[in-house]
Each structure stands twice: as structure tokens, then as C-alpha cells.
Amino acid sequence: MTILVIAEHNNEALKADTAKVIAAASAIGGDIEVLVAGANCANAAQEAAKLAGVAKVLVADHSCYEHQLAENLGLLVADLGKNYSHILAAASTTGKNFLPRTAALLDVAQISDIIRVESADTFARPFYAGNAIATVKSSDAIKVITVRTSAFDAVEATGSASVEAVDAVHDSGLSAYVSAELTKSERPELGSARVIVSGGRGMQNGENFAMLETLADKLGAGVGASRAAVDAGFVPNDMQVGQTGKIVAPELYIAVGISGAIQHLAGMKESKVIVAINKDPEAPIFQVADYGLVADLFDAIPELNEKI
Image 1 (cartoon, rainbow, N blue to C red):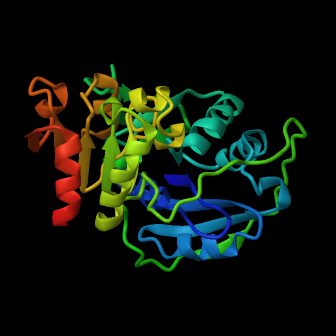
Image 2: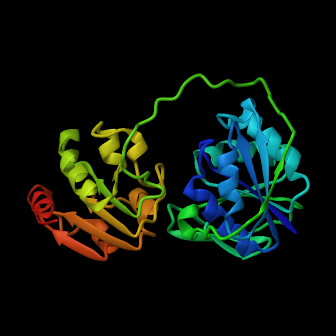
Image 3: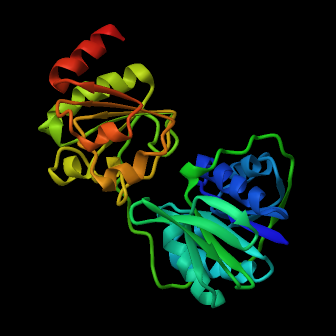
């Protein structure tokens, strides 16, 4: 039994999600190989080779994989994946984009967003916004799986796998990279941040998020938001935490002015420690919070910033 893990990277370095997907692969058992598909991605491949449990790293280095277009990457993974029992990727924007195409090309069902491995063919995944857990058993010869990385701890960088080039070039010609508008920030990404400070509709406007940014900078934290805050135009949607945003599980999650709708809780309730600040004592967020402060955030946050 050999498992193929598709690496998440930016062509220069691996993203933290890869080490967590490898943890899920380790729970399945068997040999683990990692595919790094990109352009000028040798450094990312070397990082992958150091992850514990990895037996081999395959490198598909070609311009057609530079932006990990789903059409091209899906073809590559389907081509290579015929020789594996399992194909795993993170349940990220990239993974959700190309892996269903791979499953269709292999004529198998995809199992999405697993949070636990029961056995080599049985997995647990959440549904109903995380309020119920389904146990799914697959009889397909090749199991195609996306992993909710917040449910797994990253493996250590203690390995020394071999690195092997893959010559396969799959340029479908169906899509082309045009441009990307990326938010640049010195703060950690939400998916990898140890601490996250999030604001909700209670922030009242985007300018008030400055006080959360001050707090985040003092804590070395990422800044998130509820869907209500994003829909109101306070902050861009790449900051959204929740069922339709980013799924996070930091060591500390501070929810400020967030009522705690079920969709938001689905994206952060696995956090190790949750702190909630809200002036409504009946807010649902307090049901999942380890620590709750019933207070006006416009009093509490400035005082907190002053004391930290």
C-alpha cells in the first residue's frame, strides 16, 4: 500500500498544510510519497524530503505547473495516481480545485474533508456545519481524499527521503494564468497562525479593525473575521473564518464582537483555547469559549492593548 500526498507550496517553500496531510497519511499506514508540482520548486522538494514518514519525493518541475492550474495538475495526479492506493491533498482552495478532477479521471469517488482515519478504507468527516460526523467507507481501488488539516498535527522535519524527477508534462490548454491580486501582510497566514484575533459585526466598521490589528501585532497573531463582517464590507473575504471561509485550529482564538453563528463556529471550534469578548451574555460564542468576557469591546480591547 503506497500513498501519494500532493504538496502545498508557493514554488519556493512548502506550506504548513503539507506536513499535516502527511500526518493523516501516516495514520492510514504504508509507504508515503510526496508530489511537488511547480516551476523552479527544488527548494520546496527538499523541504518535503525532510518530513518524517516520507519515503520518496517526486518533482514535476515545468512551467505548466507553476500556478497549479486545476486542469493541468488534475491530469498529472491522475496519471501518476494509477500506481497508488490513496491520493491525499489538503482541503484547501488548491486541493478542492484539482482533486475532484483527478477522482473523475480515475472514475472513483472522492472523500472530502476527513478529520480522522479509522482504517485504510474508513474515514470520518464532518457535515451539518460540524454538528454531525459521518463515517465513510470506500470500496474504490484508489482512495482520493482531501484532509481538513486543522484536525491533524504536523509531522516533524526529521526525515531524509530521496528526491526523484518526474518528466510527465500535462498542459491541457483549457486554462491560463492571468494574474492574482494578493493581500500582503507581515502577519502569519490564518491557516498556520498559532494565535488568531477575529472581529465580527460588533466591530461596526472596517476602521475599528485597527485596534484588533494592534492586539494581533503584540501577540504575533493573524487577523480574521466573521462572514457578517466580510459581507458588511469591513474587511476582505480572505480574512473570513467559518464554514464558507478558512477552517482554523490555532492554540489561541480570540473572538471579538462575534455572536457565534453555527457557520462561524464550524471554522474555529477546534481551537485549543477560545476567548470570547461580547456585550451580549446570551451570545452563542460563549457556549464554546474557554474564557468569556461580557463587556463592550470598545472598552475591553483598548484596555487589553494598553496592558499587553
